[in-house]
Image 1: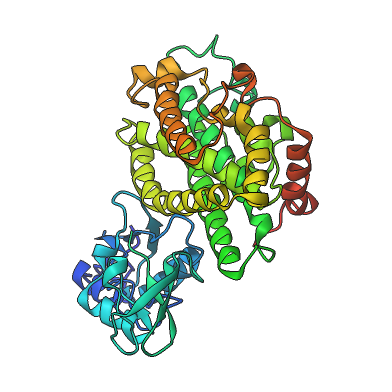
Image 2: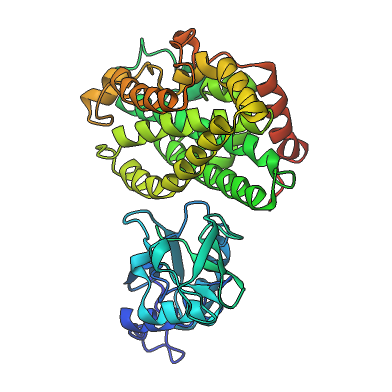
Length: 165
Length: 270
């Protein structure tokens, strides 16, 4: 146990209570390193938050197995939770597969704000700039593992769409 | 596991494996990880020189996926074997003859048609293998397979579209594809060749059906596609007994390359 000794030497002072909901709220301030308009919570990455007497454990779901941003996310999460005054364990798990259904409404709006079409079937993809449905997929493979390349025939803008998995 | 010798050296010998569950799982994980690692590293050679820009991005993404799958499988292997090595040590610190990837992947990158031929044969065989592991009793692998299969759907879409395109183009693209398929055909089935731990895998519910059954499901699929495209059917597997143990000069060159950085400064961190 790591409860601090009181400065007056009068015995153990219990560590301040930390609620899992407070930890989850703090995770809403951690943004995806490549999409600054979307938090990892709204992206649906948070699987489990557990607060024990001596530590906080956070389990996250990778969007893609090979996502190279995982280590950055791990350290950003640890930093964001450092105010809770106890060690933070951040682990990645495949216990349930991350799917694009995990994105919240706020997360989808955040993607659009970043110029990225939220995931849907290729037929339903809308241009994030002009909302046109007259779009065509150039390639399912984009600049990151989680994005595809599209082109809008109305505003003539190439754009990226989140890949449905 | 308590064996003092690295598992890959004893992997193909099951005479002293007792019940054999852990060793069979380790062998399965290592063979899958080595497959994904070798094809991923080999395909990454296209980065920067892909035939068109979108394809350069696509093959780089595919290679990155495969290396990520390899890393996750090496981590599981390291947990099962628990001999003190981490995933990087397993991936990089073995001699070339210690790798257990299928002989199909010993065929180097070659030209674009060869890369597509190899990817098509590998991805379809891998899909059949993953399907046979979807309900595996080994829980960490079941979770990982569920995730990997969602990503591999894109791999199949990509390579099947390219196979059709090369085969239906006629002329030089089709000729190059046929040359590649003829060279690789006898090694295609090595991905699904019998592993020595198969009885234990089946007994413990790790694998849903024998590799022979997985292979015939896969062959039926490939035969259907090749028939539609007017390509020669795949021949039987050449030397299935050494499907994962006897590697080519091309692989030794690749091994030299992918171990070079780590070999020059083993303690470096990134």
